[in-house]
Amino acid sequence: MSFRLALHTWTLDTTPLAEALRTARETGWDAVELRRIDFVRAAEQGMDADAVIDVVKKSGLPVACVGVEHGWMWADGDVRRRLLRVFAEQCERAARLGCATMMSPVDVGAGDVKAAAGSVKEVGDIAARHGVRLAVEFNSQAGQLNRLDRLREVLAQAAHPQCGLLIDAYHLTRSGGTPSDVAALGAGEIGYVQFSDVPATGLEPGKALNRLPPGHGVVPFKEFFRAIAATGYRGYVSYEAPNPAAWARPPAEVAREALLATRTLLS
Image (cartoon, rainbow, N blue to C red; front, side, top):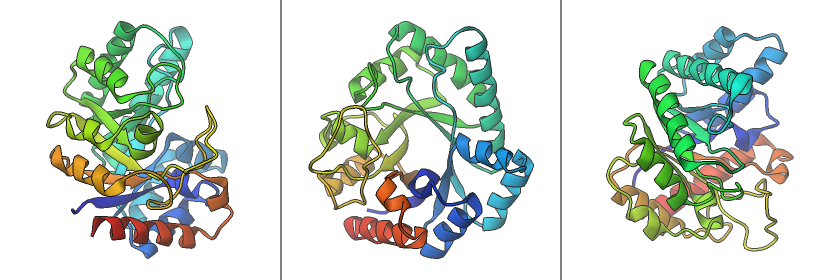
């Protein structure tokens, strides 16, 4: 199996962006995944979006995906208007970076499926105007859209060509899903892939900052990656492993360990 491997900046959350980019490049990752908060933190340090984009471009790393702020599915009023502005802003930044993929987690609460599908259509139109595609991620710790089948229902109702599924090995496993659930997906349903391992013990409801390198937990990664490949997906797969224990270690050590573990599983 052969995938292009991206390093998610949340994996090195306490590392400044410029250093995280340098670490990803020097340890051999193919690309980087950026978050909304990377731009927010830079702004707090006096860097505007133009400066951030310049730093990323100068790193020489492609951008696999750009994240948006979640909460837009069931928001209304001023909150909704702000979130949609943020969504459009992130799409514009992704386009400037040469990135064709956006990602957003689902809302963490609960609401009407039809309303969620309507919101997916709305943000799908925004993505289309910027020439990017949105991958929506179910969250195993969310109140409602916490399984693959539940998010799949929303996307089926939305039926928007610029919107697909984000499959995350961590959330798939914690929600009780299996690689066979992924293998059953139709061609083109997957918009993006993230991965990290699930600890064998110590899981707590609502908590997900315990993610591990592949092979250190219970995710059947060989089967997972085979299932992804079987769907025809050929995009980036991104290592997203937020964990305070990892943040306390040297970033290059964390990045190198994860890349070696991933390549070993894929070989």
